Length: 409
Image (tube, rainbow, N blue to C red):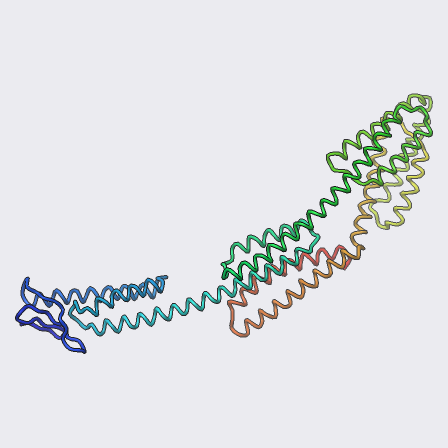
């Protein structure tokens, strides 16, 4: 018979291991000496020690799931409980118990972390929904549309919540996008309708202009062409693809008429030369109005110039485009100044800009307060997250303030 502190082999070859509950049969050994039997089962014990050590390291240093870790622990515990090794089995059992406690602790930590991540994802998605609902009322069609597309990309990068919550938030988010799209579509449909109405009016004006192009009633027809031009300007712009063609036909019809009249009045070439000099002088006078510093005075002065211009009469045909282009350039500058003034003084646009700026300023102030609170409470993770959100809101606020500056605010 042979023995060591943790086991023995009796005369029949039965191998025992000593435990707190007494001796337990490990197995039977008939292939060699008792010392070899003990050495064999001691090696099995060392194998268990190695396996438990490896599992301990995996639990501490890898992302091994609690489920897989528990299965591995149970597998090793079964081998320990079956007493097929010689050694301090109770010590191995304690190490496995400690591993169970570690796995349970990590399971709880992951549960808490997951709950925190879910809460952060919920807050982020709720913030996206609120912003989308605000943007749904915007009339900044391009910038709001681009921002909504960016919000979709942000949404896709966030973790999913439970199905009910995620579906409810997505429904609100999607509804806000749809509402914006419908409003934008209606807006541009209205513009298209206005342009179509303008096209029909201009088609009629072109038809009349072309019918008059062969007239020899010079004075009456020239006056009618001036009236047609007034109606043309009042009609607004047609679709881009139609506008240039209609304008070319309209101006072409007038050119035919005035060219014919010029031919008949060839003897007045000298007078037209003088007219050209007068119009060039008026062009110089008009060009002094630019840049526009006093819109009201400039417009009044331009009306006077224009009236005198119209009263002068025709100039040589080859000189007319250049001199008229000079006057048209001044007219465009005045129109641009008028549009700029209208945008600057438009109370509705100003109110919207002020409202948006106020909302963004309030959001920025609130975020700064939350960041200070989070820092003070030691919640740096939340403070950092809020700081990133603050950067985005501050950027929007800066844009809004620049827009407000256009109104003189």
